Image (tube, rainbow, N blue to C red; front, side, top):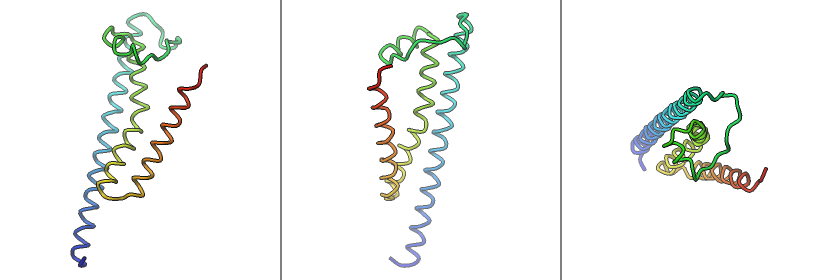
Length: 131
């Protein structure tokens, strides 16, 4: 590879990295807005139903979450908002992993996969605990 080809290749790689960071930033902003919107709707529905936002609520049941959302159950909106808050950094790691793969930065891909594996182990172990 000649020096001019290397410079062009480095410039393209840097442009791709900047574009990937912009995409990741937009993803984080969008997911944050969605999460805040869901939480606001949940609190508003609680107030409209005369439920104190400080009272304890029902547990999370993913199997009934869709039906609860359709029924405008305040707890469903709160749970979905919290799930989006938790999913936001996970989504960031996934998008970053794909961006690193496109750049052939295999060390960073391995690190992203390691982070996702640690998260999966944490979620898996949390699902096996009964309280």
